[in-house]
Amino acid sequence: MSDVQLPQDVASGLADFVEAAKSALGPDLVSVVLFGSGAEGRLRETSDVNVIVVLKRFDPARVDALRDPLRLAHALIQLSVMFLLENEIATAAEAFAVKFSDIVARHKVLAGSDPFLNLTPSRHAQIGRLKQNLLNFTLRMRERYALVSLRDEQLAPVIADAAGPLRAAAALLLTLEGRRAESPKAALELLAGEIDPAGCHEPLTHLSTARADQALPRGAGRATLLYFIELAQTLRARADQLN
Image 1: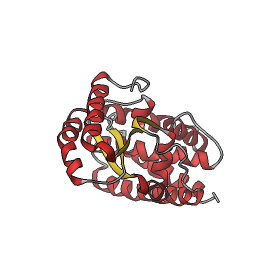
Image 2: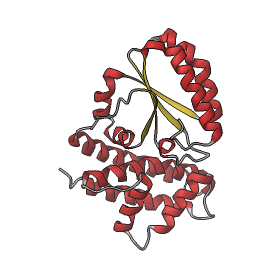
Image 3: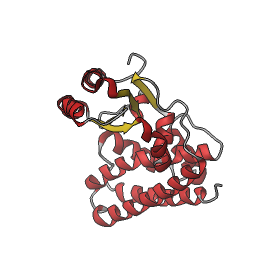
C-alpha cells in the first residue's frame, strides 16, 4: 500500500485487515480492492474506507473467521466492505453501472489480481443507471427538504452525503459526453459551472464544508439543498439527451 496516500492510522488498520483477509479467506480470496476517495489519496476524516473483497466462493466458515478483524476495522477506520464473487462482477457492473464506472476509474489493488482491469459497463447500462440514480437522488432530497429544512445542523449531514452520488453522476455524465475531469469533484464543479456560472460557487463551497466538517454556515442549508435538487434535475435532463 506504499503507493496509496492514506492517514497513518487508516493505512495501518487497512493493512491489518488485508492480512486478516488473506489468512481467513485463504484460497477463496481473489483480491482486496480499495476504491473511492481513499484510492485517490483524498480521504477525509469523516469518510468511509471503501473496500471490495472479491471471492471465488462465499464460504460462511471462512467469513466467520474474518468477523472480528472486520468489526475492529469498521470501528477504528470506518471500513465498509463489499463481498463480491468473481463471477458476479460483470452482472454487478451492468446492474450498478454508475457505481462500477466510478470503481473502474478510482481503485487500488491491495491484494491479489485486478478484477476491474478490463471491466467496462455497457453504455446502455451507464445511461439508464445514471438517469435512475439522479431521479432517486432528487426524490430523496425532496423528502429530506420537507422533513429537516429548517435545521442547518440536520441538513449538514444530508448535504455531506449528497457529495458522493452527485460527483459520481457528474463524472460519468462527462465521460458519456466524451469528456474527462481529473476527479469526480472536478467533474461536478465543471458541469455546475457550465450550467450556472454565477450561482454555483457558494453551494459547491458549502458542499465541501459539509463533507469536511459536518457543518454549514448559519442559514445556508435550505438554499444549498434546493440548489442541488435543481442541479440533479438538470443533469438528468442532459442524460436524457444521450444515446
